[in-house]
Length: 89
Image (tube, rainbow, N blue to C red):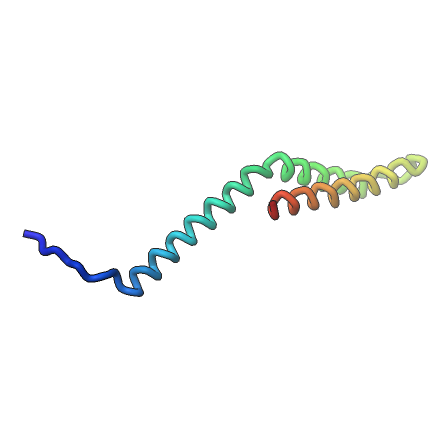
């Protein structure tokens, strides 16, 4: 037969419970933030790939390659800012 225990939980049990709850909450929030950014992250990956291709392309494009590289760099900055903004809000 089980004996009924009326003692309150120890400080160690409470601390362990709070740590577990915090870990689960952080995991949920990180997963949610990461999942919401899949398209932005994909765009960032493509922009970085485009930047790499533009950097190795020949320069004989009448300044258009250089301008495209400048615009891709600006786009990378904006996408990173958007990801950062969404992560804070």
